[in-house]
Amino acid sequence: MAALRAARRLLSALAHALRGWWTILFTFPRLAQPERDARVQQWARRMLGILGIELRLAGSPPAHGPVLLVANHISWLDILVMHAARHCRFVSKSDVKHWPLIGTLATGAGTLYIERESRRDAMRVVHHMAEALHAGDVLAVFPEGTTSDGRTLLPFHANLLQAAVSGDAPVQPVALSFVEAASGRPSLAARYVDDDTLVGSLWRPLTAPPLAAVVVFGEPQRAQGRGRRAWAAALREAVLQLRG
Image (cartoon, rainbow, N blue to C red; front, top):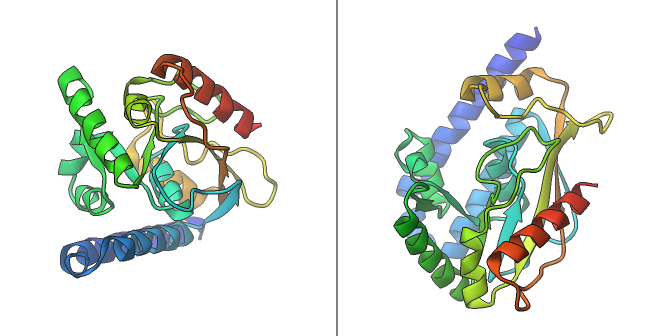
């Protein structure tokens, strides 16, 4: 019975993703940017509801940009959770742009793409990030550079912080976690690490006890003369503290 309910949710999620794809292709061209941002946030919140994941917020999301959000990374679900909490423009690996369906959704949400292996491309993306921050955007990165199981926190890479250093933009630490909704105990059901498959990482939350995604926003901070590496270490410590 649980498997049947999970299968129904999975089909509903696919239908919702297709509606999002249709909206981006045929409705977004007629909308102003604030309306697009609101649609993305509404779509993400609805998708979490379909997947049976409750959203719990603590702290204050940014009311407006410019600001760069830096968060720990557990799963592909983090992107949905962050969009549901506060629409933002992600920096993502360039492969995502070419993924069927997902690429259209990511591009429609304003994603900036980076070739991770290319230092020259990293400089290009930092330049575009600085321009976006100057224009008042809310950007988001996962400075660990990959996912972890949610119990550990990997070192933060500092390269993309240069955009905030150069533009004197604030950076806001964000802590993400997934817990069992009823008990509040940490859950590994949403993880997407090591040998986990995308299908498996989607099926586990659907069949696990109901989950809650917890998003804790810290206090924005500026570089205040720190180089990007020192700032990255301080931001990692801030995320650790937010996770409790």
